Amino acid sequence: MRAGVSILATRNLVLENKLAKAGFVIHLGPSLDRPKVGRVDPIIFVKEESNWRVIDSLWTLGRLAGGGTASAFAQNPLMLLDGSSAMAVVKRILPRIRETSVMRGDLVSEMLSHNAGNPSIIGEKPSEEIQGILARLIPYLHDKYVDVRGKVNILLGGWSVEEFRKQFSLQLEAIRILEEEAQREYDSLNQLVRVDEFISLREEEFSLVGKDAEVSLKIALGWIFYSLGRRSTGETFTREYYNELGKKDVGWIDPEDAGRWKEIMLKTVSEILEEWLSSRKTSLKEEPETDAKSSTLDRMVRSLTGEEHKISGSLEGLF
Image (cartoon, rainbow, N blue to C red):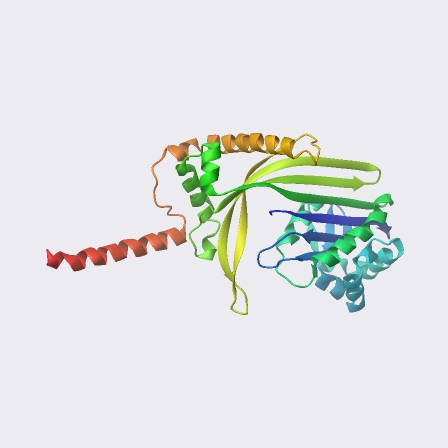
């Protein structure tokens, strides 16, 4: 989440009176456990009444269209943006399209986010190769039957907890509330959650659909929790978990105007923080207490109180 890009590129097709889209989705962003590696996955949508049938993995593409098609896509993802080859692939999978999952709602938002955490190495590519794919995508931007949508994240600022508290006058109790709320979500890690760092991101969303182009800019505020993970080889690594506090739309700002971006960032971060604090007024007034809904906290507190009881009991005979 510190930076990166997600892009969905699809060609619009009509086959056997069915609307279809074929293309690919790219996710590229720095990762502590998989540095300089991104993903390129095939995307095929076929309209069925009010829903869409979707193929969103190399494995599913190979199962329905054959291993040769999957291999060809792996070597050249832009084949699904080419009119003739995309039509041929969709025609091949159409008889078995009911074997795929159904998607509803906003396809674009779903596709630009759900593959980012895909743990499969199938579909992974080095960042240099992904940059080459993006370069070859440029000519398709002029094709009115090809739609391109995407998100770009750029890190604007980062603070340690103490730096953030001082700059934005944030009380220590607010940090406790953040950690307690997040503990329930991360209980499966069997670790106590702590806020390790605050960050602010510039989020740019863009779309080029037919002749219509749109760009929107947002500034987001979030915090990061670092956790130790272990690979199958036994090697440990540090994994980061991004937790968003909020985001706000901002007007167009010159990308080269660093001073203006810093000014707007600080103002927006203060506004997001003020709204978050306002929504937690009741919690901030309460005294700290054990979060009974967290099995990790409950287990650790019971362990600590048990140890304290044993120690005090063992010392009683000495006084």
